[in-house]
Amino acid sequence: MPDRAAAAPVPTLRHFAEVAEAYDLILCDVWGVLHDGRRAHDAAGKALIAFRNLPGERPRRVVLVSNAPRPWRGVQAILDGYGVPREAYDAILTSGDLTHDLLAKHPGARVHHLGPERDLPIYEGLDLTLVSAAEAERVVCTGLFDDDTETADDYREVLADFRSREITMICANPDLVVERNHRLIPCAGILANAYEEIGGEVVYAGKPYRPIYDAALAKAHHLDDWPALDRMRIVAIGDAIRTDIAGAQAAGIPSILVARGIHAAELGLTAEHHSLGDIAEWLSSQPVRPDAVIERLVW
Image (cartoon, rainbow, N blue to C red; front, side):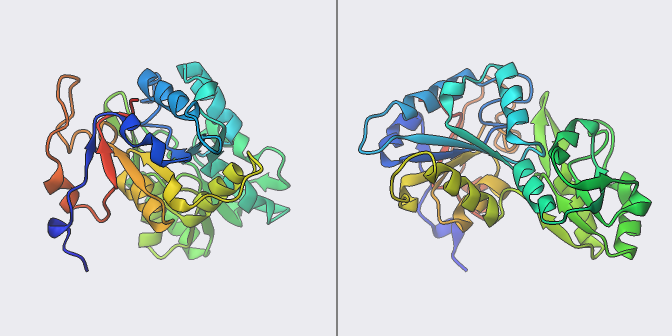
């Protein structure tokens, strides 16, 4: 195993423009990079627009890759509401899209929806029946019913029942937490982990798992009549070590960590006047390392 402490230091970028010319495609995270769950990060949208406008032999493209448990059109509507310009990206791919595709392979299935009603669009157009937990053949977990007050402990009994019947869970959002109103809010990944801990089978649709990266690259490839990109000409940008950075590394793609996201408190960035300092020690304790760090995505 490599000695992380002895590894070359991870460079800190002040501006994405410092490295933008090296890439033709950005796979960009959404929550934590483009918005904070309430409003858009204007500078991030402008940075992606500037990247897309760079000259080059082939068009510069941006695919937003999100662990949101809803179809891409739903995410686009949210981004519109927050003020993220559509000119900042070429396409969106979500874990909800992958979940929809997985369910389409099981026509007529009896599915229990474990999560808030706002995620029900994930089932639109599918041949399935939504049923109670007791009637389920499989369960789709999109999150906690009330992520402001509940924890995984509140689901102990229902998960135990699923396990006793050997029900497969599809986790439509592998994130453990997201930041909302300066709080870390639990996501579906928390329940999926709890289910695995008691021996339940979980299929994950989203980052850091390989299928979403393959699907994102396929979506990018279909945007233009160009040969497939060298993976060193692709960069993944995100704010989560466990999903964005680990997933990019597993897919053989360079990555940039946005520090002012879910790891902000760990890095001492809990107020606007705080700035990113030396994070080498923090990075040395992480299971994977990004290729660069930037405080926020700015051009």
